[in-house]
Length: 361
Ligand code: PEP
Ligand code: MN
Image (cartoon, rainbow, N blue to C red; front, side, top):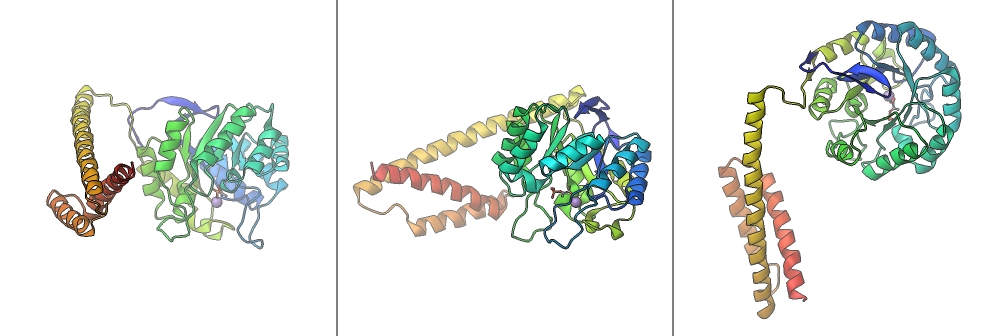
């Protein structure tokens, strides 16, 4: 891993060097599988926290639903042997009780639980007065308020060591991802909840091994603090999420290939250059807004004219002509047709709304 700034920090009370790495099998299947996977992960020296699902939320009832309580002990023992803290998913108060009894170090809330405020509140109540770190996955649907609401419930229960996991969002539409990343949502989450460490889960976003590297890199380039990547000693034989799991050896290669860029530009020339670019952008953005405002003002005047002469707001031929000419102009300036169309649709929509206001005033 190429790291330019080797600062140690702490996430969930665990010291790490960016990126914070969580890895381990999708599900605990047998003592042997858990132990061999965790020991191999420990030998990598770059894994900070080991995961394994003990109770697996499966779509169909006949799928492997996890090893249950005995898996907790396999994981905890393997973690001790490897010298690593361990984490499991909890989905109700009973899971919390069993996990805490065995001494599981960190709990995580799965996407299918975050979606349900009753479940989140039940878990938060079970954690009232307990000082255990918690990671909260985004809900399955792209609803940032549900995700933030879950954090509010845990913070209110007194949980202070807390982190967010971005695992992507399900959609009916088929895409190259198992769960679409919708990167704008974690970016907005960070703006709304500053200071909460953010971990990306490329395994559940990708759903396969091919996309893992690229999704991990994108996450780091978007300033994620860490990654949660599923690993299994024998991925092809895994009882759940077999297609997306990788061996600890492959994980090592993936981590080595990551470029860990820094958000702080250290060298002064670089800093000056980026500042210069930003000033140019600031000026252009000012001009863009100024020009759009002027255009909108004219649109309102036209609205008044249309009202006075009793003609309709939408003039289809004029709109067709605008779209055609602007797309052509845009393409000559190396902008895509799609972008120009979207931009003018937005402007046109706002102009129509303004004109309706004038018309009906
Ligand atoms: C998992 O981490 O194995 C899991 C069930 O993930 P999610 O809650 O993101 O679907
Ligand atoms: Mn999984």
